[in-house]
Amino acid sequence: MRQLLFLFTILSSIYGYSQKKYEFDYIIEYKLTVYKDSSTKKDITRYYFTNSKKNNYLAEIANLDSLNYQMVFKDENGISFNVNFLKADLAKTETITVDCPYVNRYQNQFKFRTQEYDFFNMTDTIIDGTKYSRYKLASIKPKKEKRKKLGTEVYIIDQKTAFHLPVFQFSTAYEEWKSTKNIPNGIFKERLLYDFNGNLSMKEEIVGFYSINKTILIDKGCDYTQEE
Image (cartoon, rainbow, N blue to C red; front, side, top):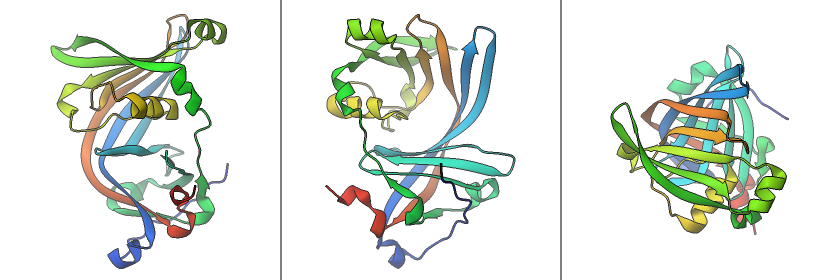
């Protein structure tokens, strides 16, 4: 995997017109817990840059080491990149530029799986006296689910964040949402992954979310969203 430690630059609005622009108005912090077995787990801090009105793109930020973050970005319409940057730059920089050598074409090779999965709305749940919406992404092919031992994702949604489109890390979830849009808007308070046997294998729990004003710029020469 090719990575780059780079500096952020603030460009003039005139130069920005020649570039692909991604705007973000929220940063969401989560604690991700991965359960390796019944007695072993690993906790990870993860951040998402999101656009509350556009959910086809997402920037995921995680600790690389004591000084650096790793950012994984994906636009479902055809662009991805994976770069590193100094933690000190995250808060103070409004505009992030990524050069073409570090930008890749992206194509979801598993769009056909929207024919194998569906979202199902679940009954609301009460947590600490507050009501939350719930839905799950699950297989609709029982034989394949059993043969492949497929898991199920459950989302618990903060109803006060209905102003924000659903946040999806995985392309299959996004493509299914795009084709049906049968679930409520909102930022997930928790995202739970259960294995085929019903055991919790991953939990992503919100720490907080905050308004931001940040932009990622990509040169027009590697705007693969414009290609057939």
